[in-house]
Length: 568
Image (cartoon, rainbow, N blue to C red; front, side):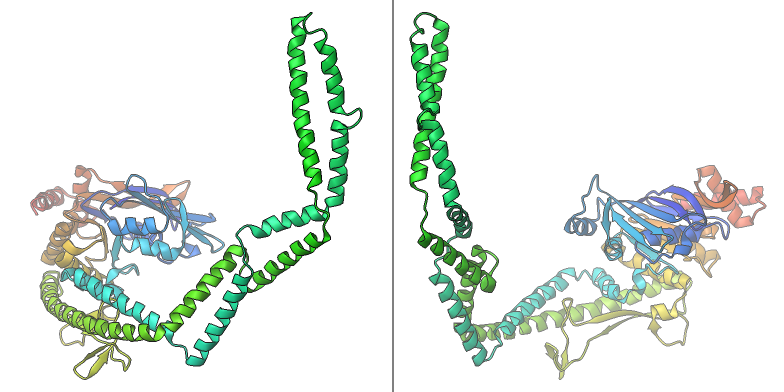
């Protein structure tokens, strides 16, 4: 549900925050007050195209922000989690910024995202119906989803997708075996050579680092011997540290029984003496083990050169080289057993195609039955909504291809993850006209009413929480306007509905009413939005009834309309 819309420096809006509520949210106001700008702003924060001329004159940046409660929107939460976007308190904040230099940025809960990701998230949040491009109904790919939701066919679609995925995996494995005998022999020979070369080297993880350290020691053996020998002399040679400490020990031991304080000093000197004697012993042992052998130098360098040569062929480290050998063994094993596995995969492919055919054909028949029911219900809704001459049909077609997986009635049809049907909603807006695509035949107001009809029919299966209608009242009045209002009110019992309207019959139905007006800030025209208390709502509905000159009769009429709406 949309909780708040924040707009800054957008078209004629300086700074605006609107808090929306559950149920039916109505926006009204005089023509040119900025109602459509609010829809443009919301569309922009949902990922629709924005241009630099939408930035308020005198500013170099516009910012749009929408806050949503997504506690009941599992699909949105899944998208956010998969995208590494944290969710706090079941809220989602979408932010869109556009700059005068043509650049822009998008954010979801402070994480920068692409416009494509923004649209992906928005598709499960809001449907906008009217002239705006952000509409489910003009997206042909969504027509099948709407039909499947109405027919409760999601489980059937999931079964088809499962078998489609299994068939795809089987064919991927078959393709991996499609190499000729000469290529097989070449791969076996190459891999066998690599395995032999790697195994004969008897590599050990960490060996290269050890050899490099040893090579460095061997290269500096003379210097090391010289310095170690000198250190040994300083410790244990004539006049060295050990002899000096021993003399000090003898001197102090002669007076230790005279002054007890000397005893502690004597203990420290003896401790230091023992430590230096140990160190001297270790240095002598280290000196004896210093290797001056040219042969060992050659052995180490030869080993390092061997490892370097293998790294150029098989990997950047000894671990990668050893992994290469394991992969080569696996490939040889796979090639040798490929004939048997190919036959097994072909049997599995045939069986899976048969299963896919049964499931896809069954799903197709269910779609046809659901389409007939949906057509009838939508047509009844359209009559109520002032489109009695319109004809609504659902086209279900299959793509014929010589390479299609599904053979039926002497044709081969393409299999998709969702089945074999291409679903599209068609409309004849007036009696006698041919059926055509919705986007080519319906006006903004008609499009909104068609979507209102469909949403009223399938609202229980709809995952989107917020519906926005613009121009749903275009070209209607009187009794039809009242019916449209009732249907919107009914729809808003289970969904948040936002609506721009000029009709008092519809405005009277609102749970929350916003008045959009032009105001002034710092000497400039700006759009102001005010949430109306009950008394002001009555006056606004009266204005919509009578015009600017509000009379007692129009106020009384408005009160009656609002009171009547409470009982729908």
